[in-house]
Length: 267
Ligand SMILES: C[S@@+](CC[C@H](N)C(=O)[O-])C[C@H]1O[C@@H](n2cnc3c(N)ncnc32)[C@H](O)[C@@H]1O
Image (cartoon, rainbow, N blue to C red; front, side):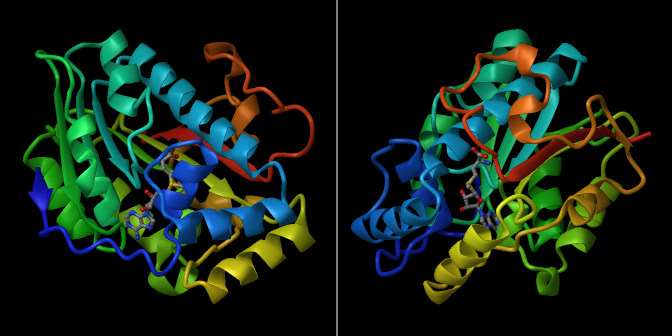
């Protein structure tokens, strides 16, 4: 496990990892996260369904990639462990799969031990780093992954926490440039395309509490995959991306899911 020393957990303001844990019914969150989570629910009662739909997208994309023969995974913005975790999905299909997790929130580091219980044949590792510092991520990942072999880079429900001012598209390019041909990029992302008023209000409320929510349009989302080949079915709302690879999330069809998901291959 590599990265900085853990810093103290700040319970005075909400954190995305802990709010997401609350939406998913986890226990690793604080009153400040629940309070902001409840404000989000008042605006958009389907947030818990959206969180589950997103988690299910991660599972299906990982299954699809492992089925394509991908054996190395770099997952940035991992979140608090929630079973099944990415390495469990991948290593169930390919016990020798190597997985590097990365997040910048100390709460994830505090729970990382749960992410590191993989198969004997495979490897799981964790590094604490910020996606806005791709060089540190690449340096840490190189200690575990073979950058001459294809790697699946997953940035799942992460990039909407990175505004354009912080170079969201450029840092994805920097990470993808380091991967060999045959690698894949997996992204899911929130959008205001379907529910502009509620989404903008949610974004403003989060901003007031110190959390950036950079909602992106379909076009801005698709630009993350520039130079790559989108695999079928292309850019989709997350629950319609290869639905046959997992069970439906209860409530997923009851209204619009304001997000996009896609997977692309590096030629
Ligand atoms: C909504 S959770 C998604 C967790 C998981 N990827 C999933 O989809 O189930 C977003 C995660 O991104 C992490 N995150 C936010 N900004 C980050 C940054 N700048 N660098 C690294 N991780 C970040 C948060 O700490 C949180 O764990």
